[in-house]
Length: 381
Image 1 (cartoon, one colour):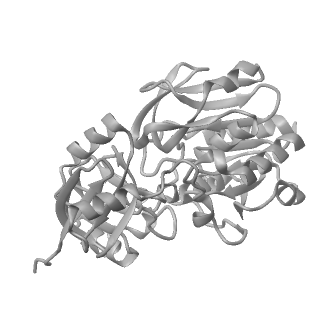
Image 2 (image 1 turned 60 degrees about the vertical axis):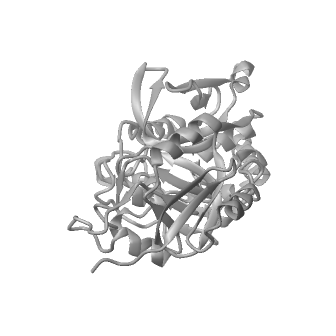
């Protein structure tokens, strides 16, 4: 029996309004509207804490066709503020599926809208930059929603990490799953390393892959100080992905500086990469519409190999950092030329802007986790 679903509107701050049909939760929600170019992986996108504060538009036209699977979650809940799609598949075809997308979003309190011309939304964002917006199934007056879109806070200056980080520290114990494409811990010879992960919104597949490489992973809240992190004597520290503006995270910059001054090896991904750059006195800036998707080409400047990467970020690291000489650019985005990775020439510090743990893929960059382990072996010896 076909469910009756309400009309819905997506209103942007520039006055553009898109009409469609609501699905998921009833109500309304606002945030920065971005587009994601992934063909698969909508569940991973929904549960990625880095999307806190954002309404996600999927460019792939059919969403929901393989349902929702417990194993595919990247956190314990959905974080997006709203979900915009062209067409909803109401009958999932997947033996792993436990729930359809509409029911999952309804249970998660996420407002969705389908029937929208997502190509038009994407083109508008590419031309004008990321726009604030509101999606609603309850308020259908276009002018009212446009005004509410203009009242939404901008992403610049927002600390969203405190809304997604864990409340207390814990040891990650989940074993290797089908989402890990690395050998099991037993396949690695040599030392087992104690790794402290600072949770700014960490995706679970990062922790899975680190565990698969033989790390003992302890995860701590974002508010943890460098003294508290270093007190346990970790072999290395990892700064995770997360949402919001990296420039305003002074507590995170202080933690990174403390680890750097101590000489403990440091790795960062996405927001962690930006935090390390800020701690090294670099600057970050807002991209026009960000990088969101699983098909972004990045060149490893050491090997000249091009990797297809998964990305989700709205800020980037400025070039001025590399003028000082002790910090080396390691990876560059081939779409817009922005910084995608760096390393310190004298200290064991490495970071990349993209997601090597990409779930569901691509997996071109998984070697970075192995490379980090090899660097730790060299550092210890």
